[in-house]
Length: 171
Image (cartoon, rainbow, N blue to C red; front, side, top):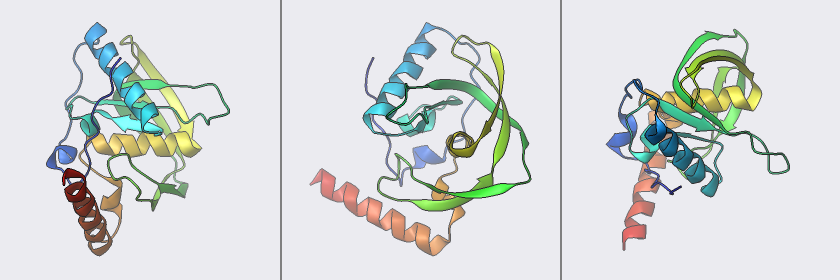
């Protein structure tokens, strides 16, 4: 397995809409394993393919806490087919926007259809942090960042801070 470079915002590659996966094969499974390894190394709970420069509709998540056994999920071509009317706010962070946290309001429960790592169709009802994480990562598949849910002023401040950090890292 290999660590993949995580793209840091602002970067136009994070605004790309993904393409559906047509074939699930060993190469794709290796890529998803690399995504998981990258996510764990960065202490994340979710990662979408665009965050590592890939345009396929793939996310990986694992919301198990440190004291629990890992519960990795590799999700291909996810589609939310139902959301609850009940919403909840959760403070979200993002590996592509390090050290930035924003409260985002999302549906509390979702029903998801997707392909698993073997290409089998699956369905899942998710709630709580799992539902939030899946929705956050699925936003990446549409070129949406969690900062797109805040005012343009706050988003501009965050992007300026990230640009400055990128510049300092290159010096």
